[in-house]
Amino acid sequence: METTIPDYPRGVTFEQVWALLQEVGQKQKETAEQLNKTEKLVKRNARQMGDLHNRFGDLAEHLVAPKIHERFNELGYHFEMMATKGCTIRGKDGKIKAEIDLLLLNSDTILAVEVKATPKIKHIEEHIKRLEILRDQYRKINDMRQVEGAIAGAIFDSEVKKATIEAGLYVIEQSGDTMRISVPDGFVPRRW
Image (cartoon, rainbow, N blue to C red; front, side, top):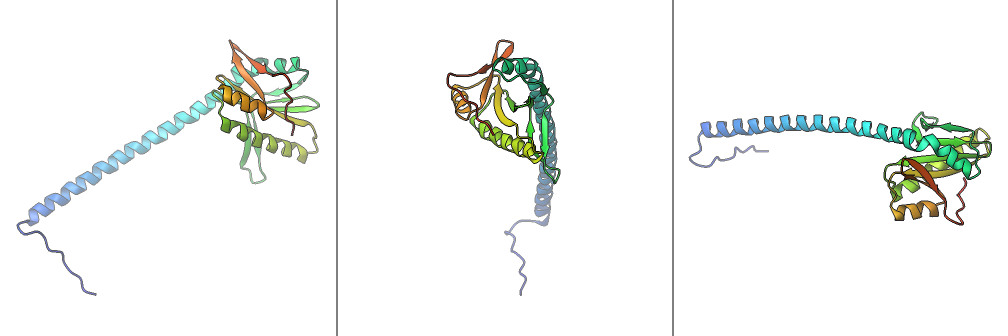
């Protein structure tokens, strides 16, 4: 194999090539510094998003939780226990399988509430998967209580509200400084 040395354009001096290489090196250094600043910004934003996620947990605890068991009890549930700090379900490998914002329990029913500032259609299917995981976890310990679900939100789009109800999930929406449960005529909650 023969090695060839590229021809430089006529009239280009070594000093000019050297200056160009130094300029390229400086640009690379500036690019690396900018990339470092960008990485720091991404890390800071990730921390802020984590903090925001935690604040949604606070939303569940402070806006939805205080009276939600009373609202469901008015519907005939008579919940005896409520977990307001959420519930984490882990697999045998220790990995998180599901996280539930609020859990209401009585001798017949386990009701899992997902809290979103602004619920979306995708949250319905995600919550249904959570409910299935929750049911399976309770079945493993021979607990045959029915599992039901609800989605709570500060701002419910009418399409999302309709889809939530059609999926058999309760809609819990903000009403003034409290939350109310929307139960249309003929609504039958889905049970797992």
